[in-house]
Length: 294
Figure (cartoon, helix red, strand yellow):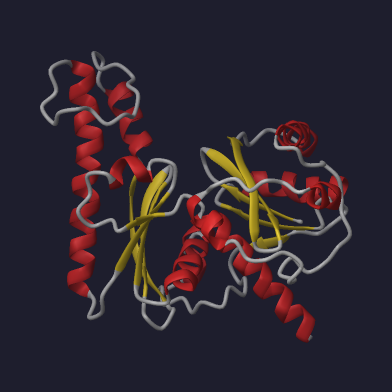
């Protein structure tokens, strides 16, 4: 089985694939100071919770045909019943992507010590199969390229991926499958924290969609500004990007807060919370195919 790890500034998201089937996924908080043993202890508990062994398995190609494709589950984030066969396999392959370099080394050591494998690391110079048209391709975050790869593979058309993470990112892919560029805005959580820290009388509020745009108290007024403000931000940037390109753009949202914003957005066409994990699997499969040809 393949363990895919997306290390973000706020959370680390894990996906366990058996072939192309996403068996399960879970997330933990990102902490730069944790050691590989601390992360392993957390992972062992999460594996047990999901009925999977925290063990090394025989190394094999994760894109083999042993398991039938179930991309619908991966796209929608649904859990797949874990078969007895899957429970016995263990982790035989790994892939990592991170925007937090200090955490990368802990996870590389975790894979080596507990699974006895060297994980694929997605970063500058990785062979993702997608041309990058940025002025300096090494400046593009790994998560942005991974999302672009997954979106294009699934839709095979011009795409615009909006990722609601610590930052809110917008990434454009051409109909030829090229990463064109994008935009970066502060994430909703960052904006909420900024209000709490910078304004003495404003409380910390839950990021939730209020019933009305016109708030009747401080909390709902802040929630309205955050949620509907980001709906306007997303729609405004998407519309401006569409006006700058000469091809149609399918807009896909991902990230934990994507469904909440998508409810009121007039431009978001699809939500795929598992887009980054799917992209990690696709890049791992491409790396394996290239290695087999060498």
